[in-house]
Amino acid sequence: MASGRSSSSSSTQGSGAHPEPVQRLVEAFAQLPGIGRRTAERLAFHVLKSPKAEAQRLAQAIDQVKSQVRHCGICFNVTDTDPCPICTDGRRDAAVVMVVEQPKDLWILERTGAHRGVYHCLMGRLEPLDGVGPETLTVRELLQRVEHPERNAGGVKVTEVILATNPDLEGDSTGLYLADRLSKLGVMVSRLARGLPAGSQIEFAHRGALADAIAGRRKLS
Ligand SMILES: [Zn+2]
Image 1 (cartoon, rainbow, N blue to C red):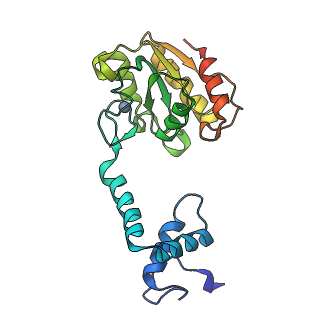
Image 2: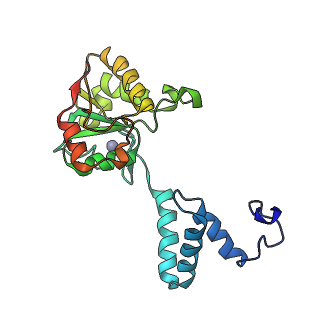
Image 3: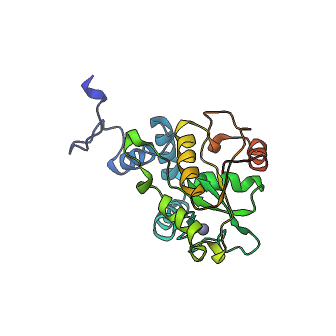
């Protein structure tokens, strides 16, 4: 049983299965979401086999994503320019702001082509039991965009906020909290229609169902 333990990097070579540098790469891949031990080993050996230039491109891409990509100062989308290309796109209607939990949700909703406004990424959702309150998210920045047009994309006054948090327990309660705060600022608040199954996640929703949910959004306040 003791032989199954390999987490701490002891000076001896762990299980001894791989040379130390390969082992480090396997460990790094194994930490990625959805990558099990076997897949991590396959990826590591793929890198080992591939031409040096190809492996360097991968290393460079990883390095650059951390050094060059940041969050948009207006909507918190991930971007290499600040403000991001969505916030600076004059063809979009900056008066309509769609609120999502994460930048990855933004990109999924964006692919539906059904939203021609701009976005606001909360960078999470309210999870009181895990200590995630409004101050941990970008709630303050959202309210400021609504209160002060100069803080919004293109200096445009926000007239509608569409809540596109996930249709599950935490997403719904985050939406209700925001609707309450926003309604006091006199802005129209709507929520994606229930085309999405309750308890589901935007990340895994069908593109058509998402487009319907945007088109059929209902007014909250
Ligand atoms: Zn932006």
